[in-house]
Amino acid sequence: MVYCPKCGKAVRKGVKFCPSCGATISAAVPAKAAEAPAKAPEPTRAPAPRKIGAGVVILIVGIIAVIVIAAILLLRGGGTGLPVYSGANKLGGQSAGGYTAEFYSFTGSGQDVYNWYKTQMVNEGWTLGSDSGYASGYGGALTYTKGNEMAVIEIIEESSTISYYEQGFNITVPSGSKLIVLMKGPSGGGGII
Image (cartoon, rainbow, N blue to C red):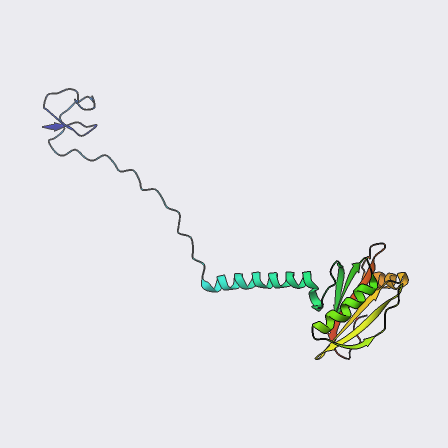
């Protein structure tokens, strides 16, 4: 018996065409098992992704946590960590010599803001050191201590004082708005204002 050179099927001797595939049988192929058709090359595989080590995961989670904490601090008052009156808009902040100052604009009653800070600061554990009193059209200032820290809160309505802060601290208070200045630093220091 011979085999078809195309499909490898067994063919009787003397047959000129393969009964299976129709290929021409030109010469006798030795009576051996037909060779298997050539195998297609194996597809190449992409290298397996590198596994991230636990240290890298911890580092990434740590960085994300720092970013989230910083964002929360900025939204609730930022660098000073002092409470921010609802409806106040942050204008900027500066730090020098261990002191941080933040500036907020607001509309509405300066007396209400002043009274809110008097209550809120005590609720957060601060001790009132001095109270300038509130004068409509001018504003007022409160000084607090807590441990080794001091906080100064100024509510400013008077336009020339607002202009002083705008020039000195490179902020812009919207027309018709009033100013809240929050400052915090070590007790007994002069601050940045």
